[in-house]
Image (cartoon, rainbow, N blue to C red; front, side, top):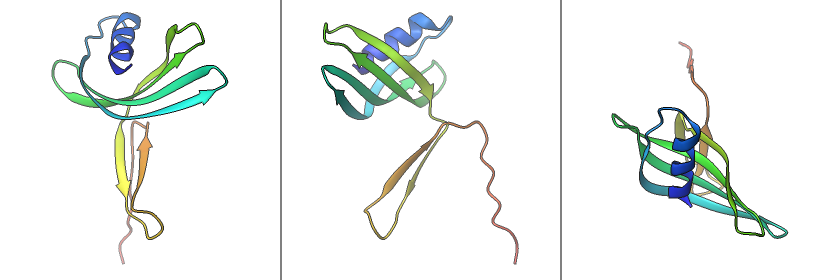
Length: 102
């Protein structure tokens, strides 16, 4: 599924030459007879390795469609008292943190 997402992305985007490295994470969402695969994929663009979030749709005829493919710009793991950890993925271009000065 992850390799399909990379191949389809490269077909759809002119000049894209991502090389699959590994599947970082994956979830499946089943609605009726249709399935969405939510994947976090590590891929190399020739100069750097980045993580990408892809959604692959599988219909009842087993035809695959790439619904989305985006670069994950930041991935933060937050530890809290209620859970072991919570992973938050941001798809933003700019993050500013102001802790103030006391």
